[in-house]
Length: 152
Image (cartoon, rainbow, N blue to C red; front, side, top):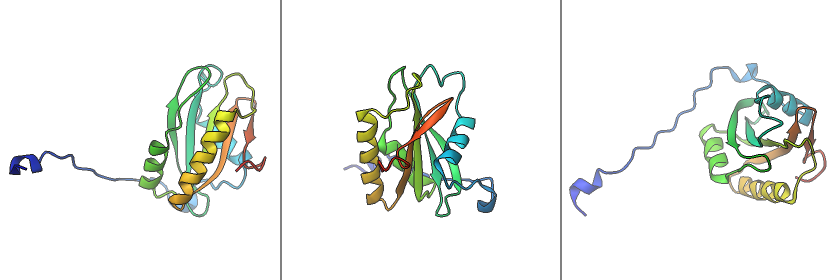
């Protein structure tokens, strides 16, 4: 390998710059609290039109480190890419996550795909010593919590 080729690599930088002290961040202790925070950050113009996915990053005390827009899909699906989810979570030094997506139809029942992707993410999180606290399916009028229904 030529010396010149050794220098043709990209530099990778990691940064996470919180703007609030940990004790000033909201603490989530229930699915309802998570839903309220998520709904306040959801695009109300799209909630009944396009499926979107978001996640809440949490520290050890369940204080919110941040909310991440994961994807915007079509009327019936969106992507939850585990590589994106965990790369962001690791960068933010999150210890646990709450994932969420909306159903534009308003039907809050999880699909088989919703259940499968949740289990995949729960298993991947364990390998990284993280927890998925919940997967919420939301609409502007309510939510379904997989944790409350003992599906996680």
